[in-house]
Length: 464
Image (cartoon, rainbow, N blue to C red; front, side):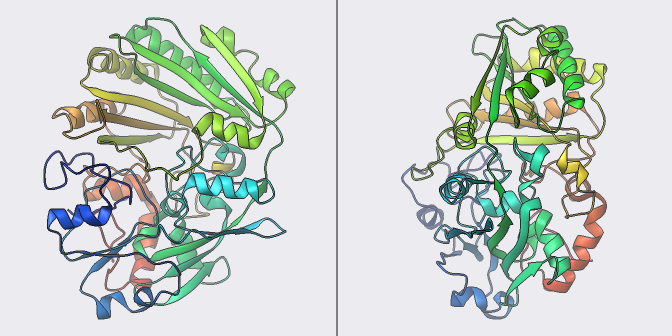
C-alpha cells in the first residue's frame, strides 16, 4: 500500500478499513504510523543540505523514499513497512528579489505562497484555489487555477528547481542546466528526486479582478441541466483568455441538484461587461452577481482565508478526473445529467462535480514545453465524493458511484489530471491518461537520473 501522503492527512479515499481507520484529529502523521505498527521512517529536514538527503538513498538505506513536499489530498493510503517518508513541512523559506524572482521551498503551501508573494511587492502566480495544497506537487504535476488561462500553469512560471537525486546529489535543474531533468520535473517531479525549492518568475498582481457567480433557484430535470451545461460550454469555448470559468454541480440536500457557475475576469469592468453581455440570455440564471476586487481580495473571495496555521479539516473521499479534448456532445451531457439526477440527488455521499475551462496560455505555450501532457484540453472534470461527515468509513458504493459519473460522461476516457490521483487506474491507463506521448521520454530521463528506481510508487515513471 505504498502511496503519496499529505502531512495533514488522516486516511485515504478507497481505504475503508485498517489500522488507520480510527485515528484522532490530534494525531500526528508520525504517531499514525507508529500506531499502525509500521516500521517505516520519517525524515523532517529543515535545510536542503541536510546530511541524510545527500547520502545516496540506494546505497545507505534500504528504504524507498517518498517526499511529501507536495501534500496532495488524493490517493492517501498511509505508509508502508520499509518506507522512508520525507516531510518537507519545515522547509518554508520564501524570498522575492527586486526583479520579481521568487525562491520558494516546497514546504510552503499555496496559502503560504499567495500570502508571501503579496507581502513581498504584491506579486502573483497562477495556482489552484485550496490554500492547504503543497507547492511541491501542485507545481510538479501541473498547477491549474483561475489565473492559468492568462498566465499558464504554476509550473510554467518555474525557472529553476533545486532537487536531491537518488544518488544523494543536490543539484539545480533549469532550461540551461540539466534541461531534460528540468522538463521531467515539471509534469512528473516525484519520480526523479526530492525537489526542495522552486524558483519562479512572478508577475505583478493584476490591479483589477472581477469575481462573478451565476446561480439557479430552478429544480433541474436531467434535460434542463444538460441544456444549461451545453450552453455554458459554448460560451466558455468562445471566451477570451482573461475569463476564468468553472461550473459546479452537486446535491442541494433536498433531493435535487444545484448548479453554479463561478470565475474571475482579469481586466476592466467594461471589458467584462462586453465579454459577458450574452450570458444572461444564454444561461437564464436566477442570480448573476459580480464584484471588483484587487488581487489579494480576489484570492480570499475564491479560496477562503489563506492562512494554513490551523490543521486542514480531514476528509474521506474518492475522486476521478477527465480532460476533454473536444466539445462534449449533447448526447454526452444528457447521459451525464441523467446519471446525476437519477443516482446523485439522494446519494449517501457528499459529492460534487467541478468543471474548469482550460485553454488560453496553457495551450499557447505548446504541447511539449513541459512534461505536462494535456495542454490541448478544453475542460477538466473533477468527480469527487466524500463520506457524509468526512470521516471513515467510506460508503461501500462511493467508488462505484464516482466511476459511474465518468462512465456516463465518457466510457472511454483518453486523459486525466495527475494531481487528482486515481488509484483505480490500471498501469496502461494511468501511463496514457496522465502522460500520453511524453511517457517514453520521461522513462528515458528516469533511467538516466534514477537507474535503480529508488523513487517509486504505484504510479511513478518506470524504467525502459
